[in-house]
Image (cartoon, rainbow, N blue to C red; front, side, top):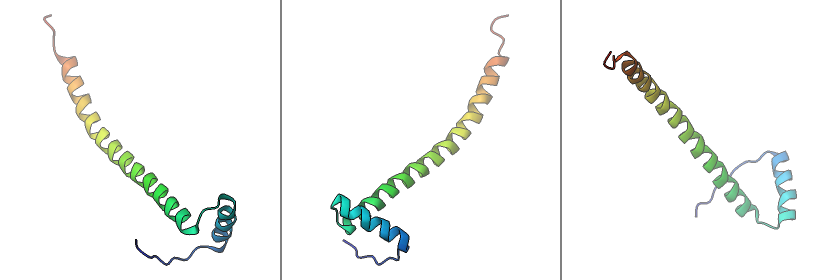
Length: 76
């Protein structure tokens, strides 16, 4: 386990302390869970961005193929 020193805004610290007394959880555990949750959100956003980019690439190719099929004369 790594030790990290960080500065937290007074308002965030105060709110966190109030929450911690109600949920009976250590500050360390709470911060670890918060970072883990935020990391999951970031990974999802990275994946969404990648999928949108790749979808755009495939879309252009798909439209090109569709146009070629539309231009084919089917036995007329």
